Structure formats: structure tokens, C-alpha cells
Length: 313
Image 1 (cartoon, helix red, strand yellow):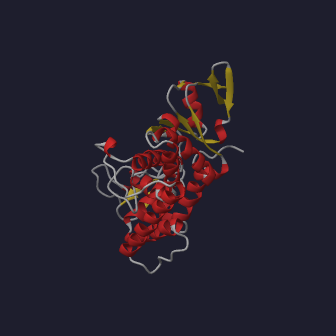
Image 2: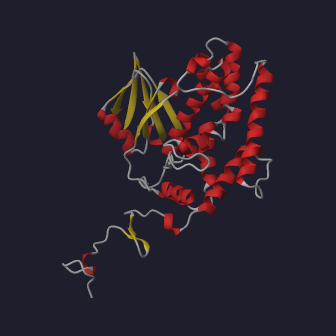
Image 3: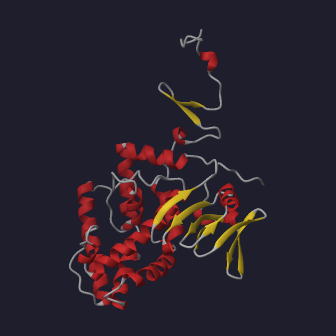
């Protein structure tokens, strides 16, 4: 069966992502192959959602073309995905998820529904259906503080508060540096998943005003079970340089939490049942219309106006 180029790939139905570093990537037949020393590793790019290129990676133009034609996003990132630099995708995909996200973000009622669902995913036992946003934030603050305290107690690490300065990294204590490093890695993974699924990283619901607002929203769903324990465990292993352990521990916690699969499922839950015919992107795409909202694309409308620009009879 021919592949539908307009259908977004689902992380749960494919290999979620492959991280590669210090390799040469080339095209082979209708797929791609990795060359690492004397080792050649074929990659089933048609079932791969995201190929993450780390340091020391060279990829040919033909390999990029093959990957994008098969619906595989390319992400250029730092070592072990610790940074997100750029991304590219070449398919003619539906903008359905982006349109739905934008609609929910701009509609106050739908916006609040998504916010409540986010907090319900983070705190399943908390009923926030009747709570104001201010009350929800207060409850969130208490629970996040308890997460730090529990991790500190588990690993025997002194803990005061979350405190860091982007402009003065060395002034933070070891735990705060480890937390910042771990969260940075988590943001990269979340951003790759968000892009792969056709959402916008900028249209946030709890966070706003940054190009990564939605990345911060999604990452907050998983910090308590991934980056917080990873950071405290890293400090337990090495209080002077916890950052070098943070990456390995993050990979362990991400794998244990089945993070990429859960991001795909949870994003679906956030916007479930909030779509309608206005966000269904058609094969040719719609055209915006100030009277009807949207009209069919791929249609020549020249017969509707005279040469002078006036409506035709």
C-alpha cells in the first residue's frame, strides 16, 4: 500500500528516534546506512520517526533526501542529545496538529481545558476540575517541592531550594547545576518529539512568550520521575562534577519511563476531542476566507471577480 504522505508519523507505531555520533551516513538503495570504522549499519528509515545527529556526524545530501521522503525528521543536536540546534523535515504533511494546537491556545475555554489536562497528567490523584488556575499553581508548587525533598532524602543530599543563574553557572550548587543539565537534556528530547508529531514548540499553555514554551509545558510532565532523581543521583556519584554523570543517568530514567512513547500518547490526550472540521487539513490545503473561515484550496477562483477586481455576476 502506498504511503500516505499527509499522515503524521506516530511515535508509538515506529522506532521513536535514533541518536548517531561520529559516523558517516549515506544512502543505500531506498534507505540509509551508517559507516562507523569497519562497521556498516543499515537503518530502516521508513520506520524511523526522528534521526538525531550528534557531534562528528557527516551525512550526504542523498541520505537527507531519502530520510525526509520517508517521513523521518532530521535533528542536529549536541552530544547525547543534550542540546537541540536545528531540525528539518521534507514531507508534505498535514498541519492538523499545529492548527488544533493554535486554536486551543487562542481560545480561552479550550486553553484552560488543556491546562487542566496537563496538571491531571502530572498529578493523577488531584481533582482540579473545580479549582482556579491560581489554586492549581499553588498545589503544583507544593508537590514539586516535595519531589525535591524526597529525592534529597533518598540520596542523602542537602537541599535548600531551586536556584540558578544562566549568566553565572558556577555560582549554583552541585544539585542545581545537575538539575539544569538534566532539564536541558529533557527539553531536547521533548522538542524532537513535538516537532516530529507536527506541533509547534512556541504555542505553550502554562508557559508563554518563548519559542520553547510548549517544550517547557511538556517537559514538566516528566521531571518528577526523570530529571529530578537523575540529578540527585548524579550528585551522589560525584558532588564536584555531577554534570558528566547526568547524561548517562537521564538516558537510564528516560528509558525506564518509556519517555518518547509516552510523549506521543500524552500529547494526544491533551487535545483529544477538541478538534472539529475547521482544523481538518485537506490534501490540497485550505485558503483562509474572511466570510467563511476557510474555502477549498487547489481551485481557480478567477470566475468570481471581474478584471477590475469587482465581484462578477
